Image (cartoon, rainbow, N blue to C red; front, side, top):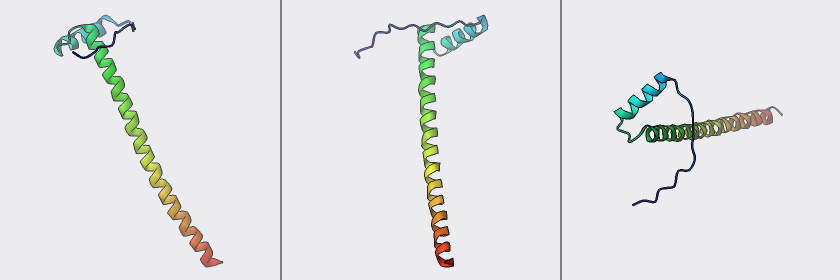
Length: 87
């Protein structure tokens, strides 16, 4: 049996009755053991998903910057050659 870390931290927040009812319905529909287990797993899944999206965004940004750097290098290289030709 895998070793489970002891859960010794609590997160507490308030919900409206409608929010609670919706959470309880989703919990039942997904077959979660308890409302607490369901809320924990959904919250942690959202955090992981957000981190993945941020990492993909950073990777995309890095690729774009590298392309821009290449284009600028080409552009400045052409300008230098053109200036040498005029001199």
